[in-house]
Length: 167
Image (cartoon, rainbow, N blue to C red):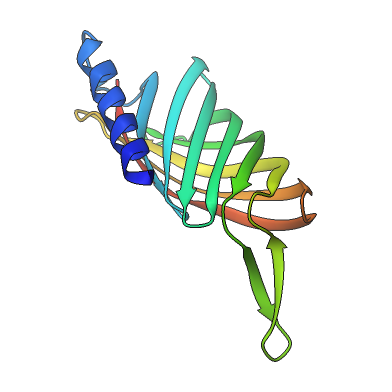
Protein backbone atom coordinates (compact mmCIF):
# COMPACT_ATOMS: atom_id res chain seq x y z
CA UNK A 1 0.00 0.00 0.00
CA UNK A 2 2.78 2.44 0.93
CA UNK A 3 4.64 1.68 -2.30
CA UNK A 4 1.51 2.33 -4.36
CA UNK A 5 0.86 5.69 -2.65
CA UNK A 6 4.50 6.76 -3.04
CA UNK A 7 4.52 5.77 -6.73
CA UNK A 8 1.23 7.62 -7.36
CA UNK A 9 2.58 10.79 -5.75
CA UNK A 10 5.81 10.65 -7.76
CA UNK A 11 3.92 10.09 -11.04
CA UNK A 12 1.53 12.96 -10.23
CA UNK A 13 4.48 15.23 -9.46
CA UNK A 14 6.24 14.39 -12.69
CA UNK A 15 3.04 14.98 -14.66
CA UNK A 16 2.60 18.39 -13.06
CA UNK A 17 6.25 19.20 -13.71
CA UNK A 18 5.88 18.19 -17.36
CA UNK A 19 2.95 20.60 -17.71
CA UNK A 20 4.94 23.61 -16.58
CA UNK A 21 6.40 25.78 -19.31
CA UNK A 22 9.71 26.56 -17.61
CA UNK A 23 11.47 25.22 -14.57
CA UNK A 24 12.74 27.65 -11.99
CA UNK A 25 16.48 27.83 -12.68
CA UNK A 26 17.18 30.98 -10.69
CA UNK A 27 17.75 31.23 -6.95
CA UNK A 28 14.00 31.36 -6.19
CA UNK A 29 11.06 29.07 -6.92
CA UNK A 30 7.26 29.05 -6.66
CA UNK A 31 6.42 25.35 -6.12
CA UNK A 32 8.50 22.32 -5.16
CA UNK A 33 7.77 18.61 -4.76
CA UNK A 34 10.05 16.04 -3.15
CA UNK A 35 10.90 13.82 -0.22
CA UNK A 36 11.63 14.55 3.41
CA UNK A 37 13.58 12.30 5.74
CA UNK A 38 13.12 11.88 9.50
CA UNK A 39 10.70 10.26 9.30
CA UNK A 40 10.21 9.55 5.59
CA UNK A 41 7.55 11.60 3.83
CA UNK A 42 6.44 13.34 0.67
CA UNK A 43 6.54 17.13 0.77
CA UNK A 44 5.09 19.86 -1.42
CA UNK A 45 5.79 23.55 -0.81
CA UNK A 46 4.07 26.42 -2.61
CA UNK A 47 4.74 30.13 -2.17
CA UNK A 48 1.54 32.16 -1.87
CA UNK A 49 3.55 35.42 -1.59
CA UNK A 50 7.26 36.18 -2.05
CA UNK A 51 7.93 35.55 1.64
CA UNK A 52 5.07 33.18 2.63
CA UNK A 53 4.64 29.51 1.77
CA UNK A 54 2.30 26.61 2.47
CA UNK A 55 3.90 23.21 2.99
CA UNK A 56 2.16 19.85 3.19
CA UNK A 57 3.99 16.74 4.34
CA UNK A 58 2.58 13.22 4.16
CA UNK A 59 4.48 10.80 6.40
CA UNK A 60 4.19 7.06 5.88
CA UNK A 61 5.76 4.57 8.28
CA UNK A 62 5.08 1.11 9.63
CA UNK A 63 2.88 2.49 12.44
CA UNK A 64 0.52 4.51 10.23
CA UNK A 65 0.10 7.77 8.33
CA UNK A 66 0.41 11.43 9.35
CA UNK A 67 -0.30 14.65 7.45
CA UNK A 68 1.32 17.91 8.54
CA UNK A 69 0.33 21.32 7.16
CA UNK A 70 2.57 24.35 7.77
CA UNK A 71 2.29 28.10 7.09
CA UNK A 72 5.84 29.39 6.71
CA UNK A 73 7.32 32.90 6.87
CA UNK A 74 10.52 33.09 4.77
CA UNK A 75 13.32 35.65 5.00
CA UNK A 76 16.49 36.19 2.97
CA UNK A 77 19.92 35.69 4.49
CA UNK A 78 22.12 38.60 3.35
CA UNK A 79 25.13 37.62 1.27
CA UNK A 80 23.78 34.14 0.50
CA UNK A 81 21.62 34.13 -2.67
CA UNK A 82 19.15 31.26 -2.65
CA UNK A 83 19.41 30.70 1.13
CA UNK A 84 16.44 31.62 3.30
CA UNK A 85 15.40 31.05 6.91
CA UNK A 86 11.81 30.08 7.62
CA UNK A 87 9.53 29.65 10.62
CA UNK A 88 5.84 29.24 11.20
CA UNK A 89 2.87 27.45 12.76
CA UNK A 90 0.96 24.39 11.60
CA UNK A 91 -1.06 21.32 12.53
CA UNK A 92 -0.96 17.56 12.08
CA UNK A 93 -3.40 14.69 11.99
CA UNK A 94 -2.83 10.99 11.63
CA UNK A 95 -4.02 7.43 12.07
CA UNK A 96 -2.07 4.57 13.62
CA UNK A 97 -2.38 1.07 12.20
CA UNK A 98 -0.14 -0.50 14.83
CA UNK A 99 0.90 0.09 18.42
CA UNK A 100 3.50 2.78 18.95
CA UNK A 101 5.29 3.67 22.16
CA UNK A 102 8.51 3.34 24.10
CA UNK A 103 10.09 1.32 26.88
CA UNK A 104 10.35 2.64 30.38
CA UNK A 105 11.69 1.10 33.59
CA UNK A 106 13.23 -2.33 33.10
CA UNK A 107 11.33 -3.63 30.11
CA UNK A 108 7.83 -2.34 30.91
CA UNK A 109 6.19 -1.23 27.69
CA UNK A 110 4.13 1.96 27.45
CA UNK A 111 2.14 2.70 24.31
CA UNK A 112 1.21 6.19 23.19
CA UNK A 113 -1.17 4.72 20.63
CA UNK A 114 -3.05 1.51 19.98
CA UNK A 115 -4.09 0.20 16.55
CA UNK A 116 -6.68 2.50 14.92
CA UNK A 117 -6.02 5.50 17.18
CA UNK A 118 -6.37 9.02 15.76
CA UNK A 119 -3.87 11.82 16.43
CA UNK A 120 -4.26 15.58 16.18
CA UNK A 121 -1.99 18.39 17.31
CA UNK A 122 -0.27 21.71 16.67
CA UNK A 123 3.17 22.11 15.10
CA UNK A 124 5.84 24.70 14.60
CA UNK A 125 8.77 24.79 12.19
CA UNK A 126 12.15 26.53 12.10
CA UNK A 127 14.64 25.89 9.33
CA UNK A 128 16.85 26.82 6.38
CA UNK A 129 15.83 26.55 2.71
CA UNK A 130 18.29 26.64 -0.21
CA UNK A 131 17.52 26.83 -3.95
CA UNK A 132 20.40 25.90 -6.27
CA UNK A 133 20.83 28.55 -8.99
CA UNK A 134 20.83 26.99 -12.46
CA UNK A 135 19.24 23.73 -11.30
CA UNK A 136 15.62 22.87 -10.45
CA UNK A 137 16.65 21.56 -7.02
CA UNK A 138 15.79 22.83 -3.53
CA UNK A 139 16.97 21.46 -0.19
CA UNK A 140 15.92 22.30 3.34
CA UNK A 141 16.81 21.41 6.90
CA UNK A 142 14.45 22.07 9.81
CA UNK A 143 13.12 21.14 13.21
CA UNK A 144 9.39 20.69 13.83
CA UNK A 145 8.37 20.70 17.49
CA UNK A 146 4.80 19.54 18.06
CA UNK A 147 2.22 19.11 20.80
CA UNK A 148 -0.11 16.12 20.53
CA UNK A 149 -3.59 17.17 21.72
CA UNK A 150 -5.71 14.09 20.93
CA UNK A 151 -4.76 10.52 21.72
CA UNK A 152 -1.92 10.54 24.22
CA UNK A 153 -1.07 14.21 24.94
CA UNK A 154 2.67 14.80 24.75
CA UNK A 155 5.36 17.00 23.17
CA UNK A 156 8.11 15.90 20.80
CA UNK A 157 10.32 17.16 17.96
CA UNK A 158 10.44 15.97 14.35
CA UNK A 159 12.09 17.67 11.43
CA UNK A 160 14.69 16.63 8.99
CA UNK A 161 16.12 17.19 5.55
CA UNK A 162 14.13 17.61 2.34
CA UNK A 163 15.14 17.41 -1.32
CA UNK A 164 12.65 18.83 -3.83
CA UNK A 165 12.23 19.36 -7.58
CA UNK A 166 11.22 22.98 -8.25
CA UNK A 167 8.90 24.31 -10.95
